[in-house]
Image 1 (spheres, rainbow, N blue to C red):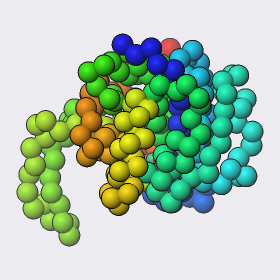
Image 2: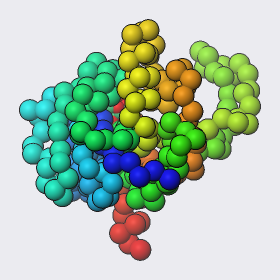
Image 3: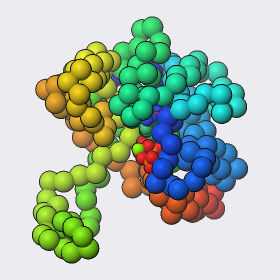
Length: 230
Ligand code: CTP
Ligand code: MG
């Protein structure tokens, strides 16, 4: 069980091109608040999260975000051209004394306290990082030019979510190596694996939806409404 103090890096440096809107998705309104606000407020509610770094494409386009962080110290970094580069910019702003780094996509506003606790509880001396995964439910097909070419087994395949929690040095080392070698990575665990680090998988959360396409925002609204109705 970790006792490390955590810096949370909240990534909001993307343009949200698959949403097809001029406003990036992290700034869109979700039941009266920007998408980005939800994860900031949740991370700030944990005592072990001592510092939050928000990585923004254009910091001048955002109002003051400290109101969402309930007194937890906040730094703003300017994002890079890729997610990986934005993580690197966030890592420049770690708090002194940080033992572990929680990297989160602001495009997942419904991240829950239970998931954050599960990750923190699973970061022990046997591993360098912990990520949430979900078993794939649908049958998988390889499709090209509108034709189904082959079936792929879903056995052993999982979807990975954020937040992802890593010990500080392995994350810094893995990121520096993959950038030096020019390896892109869709998530941080990919970089740790290529550098030979150990990453544990814990159960993710099916309600921790990532906003990628316009329909995902509607799904998030409905999940929040059903929570409020309970
Ligand atoms: N991200 C980032 N910097 C980048 C690219 C992405 O900080 N240069 C962040 C996004 O803001 C998002 C997360 O990484 O919170 C996951 O990326 P994704 O869902 O791909 O978001 P976008 O890149 O913004 O969307 P798209 O790929 O559709 O353009
Ligand atoms: Mg992207």
